[in-house]
Length: 252
Image (cartoon, helix red, strand yellow):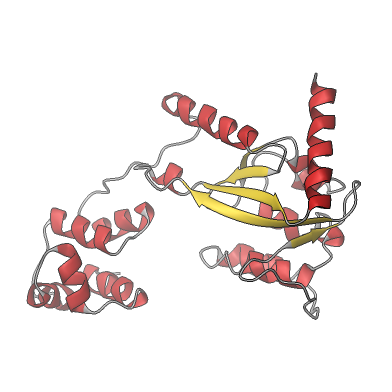
């Protein structure tokens, strides 16, 4: 895609007028109009200012730079890179710090990077090939050999998962094929979609929070997501605490 169209599409996707974006980027509407029409070629710094003003993810900022004919600015490292050892340690610290409640970190594709011990209560009974580092947690959630048979409100939870996969159309199509047409159940918790999950410690009622590493300047790190599960009721909190205590005792 050529740069003027790429810029225009991203601006309209965010429902910004040319004037809005120009003010954010510290330029004039006339100059922005010339850029979007191809009558003016922006410098590298202007492309970066526009990308930042649009609040684009780092991957898209690199794509916009490429479309304008410039080299990407933001590196995309492997988590196995020795230079990222402190980051891996920090990730492990974060998920452990969420105990006794389950927490995990995934990459942009939903592949598992790290999880704490209580997450085993979520995954119990799932096929081994769906569980563990490098495995896709969205597939784990909705695959019939994953945890889907234990989800009591599968209709809502499936919609919640699928709504997050717009950037992964092939995976979304695969997972949508696993989900039957089910009538939604009652009991939504405001804007949150609680997970009602059968487990060896009784029914768990969980809501989730998703956090990104927003200050990262590396594409890989910026796309990591921390998903933390929180109990909706005291029974779930007690079950998670007991599970974490048991896991710690076993490990000790």
